[in-house]
Every structure is written in structure tokens, then in C-alpha cells.
Amino acid sequence: MAGGARDIIVAGGFRQGRGEPLSSVDPATGRVFAEVSTASVEDVDEAVTAGEAAMRDPAWRDLLPHRRAALLHRAADLIHAESESLARLQTLDNGKTITETRALVASAAGTFRYTASALETLDDTLTTARGPYLSMSVHEPVGPVAAITPWNSPIASEAQKAAPALAAGNAVLIKPAEWSPMAALSLGALLLRAGFPPGLVSVLPGPGGVVGEALVRHPGVRKVTFTGGTGTGRRIAAVAAGKLMPVSLELGGKSPTIVLPDADLDQAVRGIVFGIFSSQGQACVAGSRLIVHRSVHDEVVERITAAAEALVIGAPARESTHMGPLIAAEHRAEVESYVRLAAEEGGHISTGGTRPSGDALGEGFYYRPTVITGLGPGSRVCREEIFGPVLVTLPYDDEDELPALADATPYGLACGIWSRDYRRAWRLGRRIEAGTVWINTYKQLSAATPFGGVKESGLGREKGREGIRSYMTQKGVYWGLDETPSAWGL
Ligand code: NDP
Image 1 (cartoon, rainbow, N blue to C red):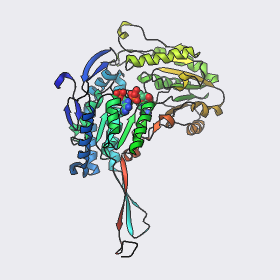
Image 2 (image 1 turned 135 degrees about the vertical axis):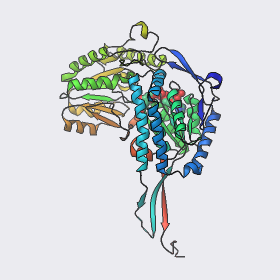
Image 3 (image 1 turned 45 degrees about the vertical axis):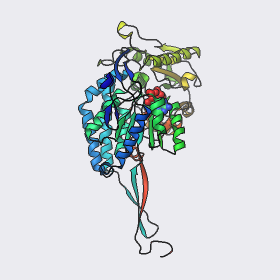
Image 4 (image 1 turned 30 degrees about the horizontal axis):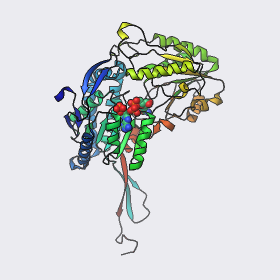
């Protein structure tokens, strides 16, 4: 580790990047715990060029899918073997509780394992011929892939992109968020240990405006898979349009959770509290807008308020903690400004709205779980993503109002429905504009089930077998079977 800063991974080699080093801060204490070297535009160019060469190398290009799957399985084994240290590193880097970071690491290993199995069972197909030939559809790698990720669920986000990109035969260039680069660097190291050829994997931390932009604009990058804010996603899509390059965009959300009057309220309250306050609300799918039938609204708010007040806020490495700190002081300030805005807009804060007290929490970026009532659906706090532990509630009277009320934001990422009547929940779930609908559950995710958003929540789907296909391009192949293959009969 020359220069004292942690090395980055350029074209399969560990070395100091040529960008300005960044400091990784523990959000629980506000203290710097590591310096990380960052990539420069020249490093990006080197990494992309090496990625193109590695993809052309017959040692990789001709490796059959079941052999690529073996490498993915090995990566899963290594992630599993290192799971506790990976989870602890991540908790230090972004303040998520240790129970949550363990789940993220397990999800990353599971993604590699699922992808390996799916890869082995993906078929090329014979297509229906309309002449004297045999015709086929085969799949090939799309080209070097830039995987740009946010800070809220590292390792799981990176695995969700790297596993299918590699399975499809591509080089992958990972650009983690500046606030949480550590897990991506560890994942990159494990991928190299698993035996992926050097050159195929780079991990390039650094500012989005420099490293991210350089990757997106680089002529050698042939696909961008991005998770992050809607504004950044829109900017990436505009550059991609100029290059005619496919993009997959997993963006923000303001997801509604609907409580019908026949819901099991005990179950619903537990699910709602987990859906908004786990990860300190810093989740794209956080159920941040609660839409409750007026007949049970006050009771539900009262119960959620009590449950929120019982949550343990504290050091994220402690097993009993429910909520750790937010990622950064600036981010907490933004969350606080939304709570002030809610009060200005006429909202009532039924719990939270302040930092927790206590010496042990004073240095970290903690914020109490907050519940706001009394705002209309058109208020900014009900329409904009806050990305923190803030729940707004809206009563409704008539089931027919629900689809319009649920869809009354620019987003369409997820939706929760709590009801004992499965027919009703099904009908409602099919009408709401969202990429994921949870009925009597929330925040459950499977590597096999498509994930993504509609409207300003994104473009494209990750996960599942189609998720691997999205990193491939199709080719039609024709085998002439006639002695006179040309229409001239020559
Ligand atoms: P950002 O969009 O700010 O950043 C995401 C990534 O993009 C970071 O690595 C960032 O780098 C990079 N980036 C920034 N500017 C550019 C650019 N011009 N070109 C290329 N890359 C760039 O989002 P946040 O990190 O703040 O993450 C929070 C957002 O992510 C929320 O809106 C949340 O909803 C969304 N999200 C969506 C998910 C989904 O699956 N739909 C899942 C998780 C989060 P840097 O860190 O240096 O700024």
C-alpha cells in the first residue's frame, strides 16, 4: 500500500490511482478510518483498454459457459468464506447495522451462485427457417461494462451488476460511491482470487463527475449499468444516447405502502416500520409514503409511533441495534431540511424530527425515526425522495382513489399492500405503477425475480435469467443447406 492510501484495482493489478486520495469516514464516529487512492481519467482509459483486450483473449473469449460458471461459484465461495470481515468492513464504511451488512454479503454470494447456475442453463435457440437454411439465435457479450453504484447497499449492488456482466462474458469496471468504496475493492480482490483473468476486472473509486463521467463517455465502454439518483441517471442516459449504448438505470423512489381496512394490523405495523426505518431509511425501496384507510389511520399512526420509539438507535456494529447513523453529516442535514419543510408545509411530527440524545451518539450522524401526518399528497415531502428515516402518512376513504394516490409521484419503484383479502390486493397490485409489489410483506428480494422501476425510477431490469441476457447481444446465424445459396441461382 504505497503512499499510505489503499490501492485501487486497475486492469487486475493493485496500485495507487493517479487521482486525489479520498478519506473513508466511519459514520458512527465521524472519524476517518482509511485513505483510499482514486482513479484518474488515464487510469480509466488503461482499465477499459485492458478490459477490451481481456475480452478478445481466446483464453477468456472461448471459455465455455460452464467454465465461466465455475469461476462464479468460486467467487461465491470466497465471499461466503470472508463474510464476517466483509460485513464488519461495510458497517464501518457506511454505518449500516451488522445484521443488515451480513444480509448484504449473503445476498452478494447468493447472486454469484444463482448467476452461475442460471448461466449453465441458458440456451441458444434454433429459429424457424423461411428458406433452405438453418437459422439460429446466439448470444454474445455486449462489450466492456461500467458498473456505477451508490453508497447505500455496497457489495450487494456491485454483485448484482458484476456477476451477470461477467457471466455474459464481459469485462467489468466497477465505480463505487465515494462515501463507501471499501466493499467494492474487497469484492474486486476476491474476483481476482477466484481466477477471473487480470484485465477483466477493475475497481475504480473516485468522484462521479470525473471517474464516472470518464467511464460513461469512454468509446470502449459498451454498456453502463447504474444505480443511484434520478438526476445522475438522466445525465448518463443522455451521454449513452449519443453513443447509442444500452444503459440500465436503477433510480430513486417514493414508494407507497397501502393499508386496507381489513389488514392484519399487527403484521402491517411490523412490516411498515421495517420497510421505512431499516437502513435508516436509506433504501431506494423504502416504504416512505403510508396510505391508510381513514377508519384505521389514527390507530396505525399511534402504533407505528410507539414501535418507532422502541427501536434501538446506536453503534451499528452492536448486534442489538436496529438503526445506526446516516451515511454523512451533509446527508443528515438534507434529511433535516425536509423535516423542517414538512413543518412549514403544515405537517405534524408525531415522533422523531430530532437527533437522538446521549454522549455515545453525539459524534455520529444519527437521526431519530420520524413520522409526519397532516400533509396533502401534493406537498413536496409527500412527493420527493428524502432517503432517510422519515415516513409521511396519508388517509384515504375510497378504494377507487388508491391507484391515483399511490401513483401521485414521479417515481414508480415499489409498493406495499397490506390486506387479508388476496383478491383485492392482487387487483390493486396489478393497477399500481411500480416495478415491485409486495403483498403482506416488504423488502423481500430474490436473485431470481426481476427488479427495477418505471417512470423516474428507472429503465431496464436486473436479476433473474433476463438480467444475464441484458449484458449480451443477440446474433442471428444462417447455415445454407442448398447447393445454390443465392437468389440468382448461381
Ligand atoms: P448518486 O446518483 O449521487 O450517485 C450514484 C453513483 O453515481 C455514485 O458512484 C456517484 O459517484 C456516481 N456519479 C455521480 N455523478 C456521476 C456522473 N456525472 N457520471 C457518472 N457517475 C456519477 O446517488 P447516491 O449515491 O446519492 O445514491 C442515492 C440514490 O440512489 C437515491 O436516489 C436512491 O434511491 C438511489 N438508489 C436506487 C436503487 C435502485 O435499485 N433503484 C438502489 C439504491 C439506491 P460519487 O459517489 O462520487 O458521487
